Figure 1 (cartoon, rainbow, N blue to C red):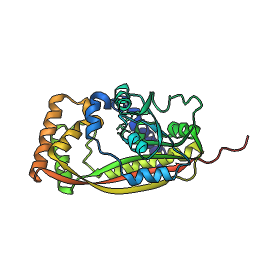
Figure 2: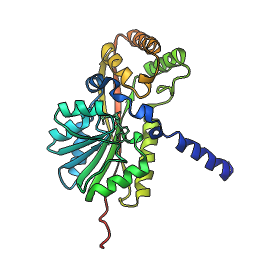
Figure 3: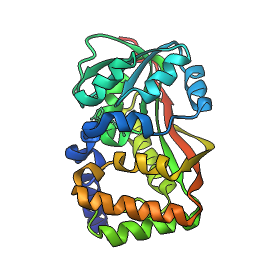
Figure 4: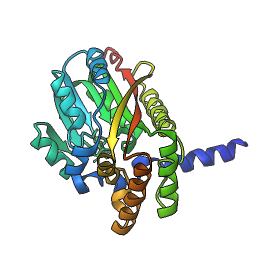
Length: 278
Ligand SMILES: C[S@@+](CC[C@H](N)C(=O)[O-])C[C@H]1O[C@@H](n2cnc3c(N)ncnc32)[C@H](O)[C@@H]1O
C-alpha cells in the first residue's frame, strides 16, 4: 500500500480511538451499582506480580470506576488513590473505602504527589495513551511501575457465535459487535497501543506484556446482569437492549442455562527509568 494511503488509514484509526468517544468513556456510571456487582474481578496473580514489581505500596488507579481493582490492591496491602471523571462511579468507590479524585487522568492535578505504581484496570483505552503515559511518568517514583490491564472474555466458541448472531440480528448498527472477532485480539491491540504510548513517553524501560488465564462460570442471570454494563450499551434505546438481552438469554438457555468462560487478563507494563540528574 502506498505510504500516503497508509498514513491516511492510521490517522483515521487514531481519530476513531476509543478515548475520543467521550460519551461512551464517561457513561459507565449510568448504573454504577450494577457495574460493581456484575463486572469480573482481576486475577490475584496479576495483583501480586504488580505489587512485587513496584518499589513501594503507593498505588494510583487511573479510571478506578467503582473501585473493583482498587479494593484488590488495598487487600494486598497497598494505599490506593483513584482518579475517575465520572462522579457516579467515584461516589460508589468512596462508599467502599477508596479515596477518589474526580477528573480525567490526563487533566488530573497530582499536586506534587508521587506513587510507586500507576494501574489502569479495563480503563486505559479511555485514556489518551501518549498523554496518559506521560502523566504516569510524571507521578511515578524511579523504578515505579505502570501496569495497564484488561480482562479478555472468551465464551465457548458456539456461544460466541450465537452472541454475534444475536447482535447482528437485533442491532446491525450497534457501535461495534464485540463477538464478531475474538475479544483477545481487540485487547492485544489495546496492549499494543499502550506499549506505543509508553515508548513515546520516553521515560520507561521497554514495555512487557503479561498474561494470566483463568476460568469463570456464569449462570444466565449472572451474564445478563453484566451485559448492560458494556461500553456503548447504555446509549442504545431500552427496547433494543431488552431485545438483545432476550436473544442472549435464549442462546445461553440453548447451552443448558450456564457456561464457563475462559478469561485471559492481558497487561502492558513498564518500569519508570530514573530521571536524568539535573
Ligand atoms: C470500564 S470502566 C473500569 C473501571 C474500573 N477500573 C474497573 O476495573 O472496574 C472504565 C472507567 O474509566 C473511566 N474513564 C473514562 N475516561 C477516563 C479518563 N480519560 N481518565 C480516567 N478515567 C477514565 C470511566 O469513567 C470508567 O469509570
